[in-house]
Length: 155
Image 1 (cartoon, rainbow, N blue to C red):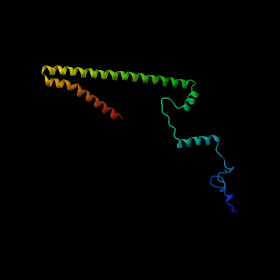
Image 2: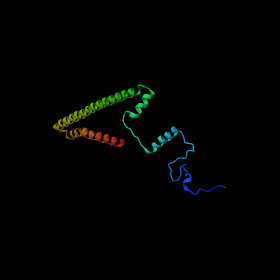
Image 3: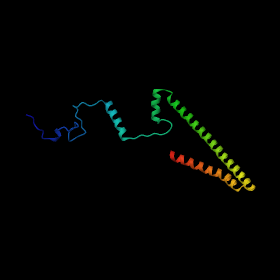
Image 4: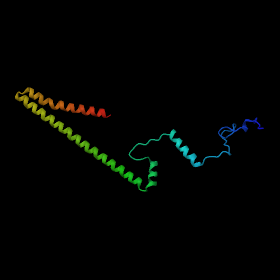
């Protein structure tokens, strides 16, 4: 007949340790290999820690992994980032030049329209002068409004 133990410390808990010392692990239970324990711990860390990285380059920890795959990978990645950066700067310069030319063109058109409107008003064509003077102003205001509207819809 089986005897029921009277001492609670003699009863093993569900995790293999005694109730008095739950951290104690029963050595008779087979333990998983250390590699599996480490892999599970790393997998669980993903649930508790969030790691974010932003920028044109990968995080520094990934550079080592790239170097393990191909020795020249980090240098190639840096070269691509530098070329992309210089290209982006050149595009900005071109865009600024184009914007300057557009503004200058609008100014010249407005100035010519006002000069023509003044000349027509001097000759006595008041309605024609008013239409000639107001048309570029209205066109400019409409262009500014529609560009603002499109930019607002994109955002």
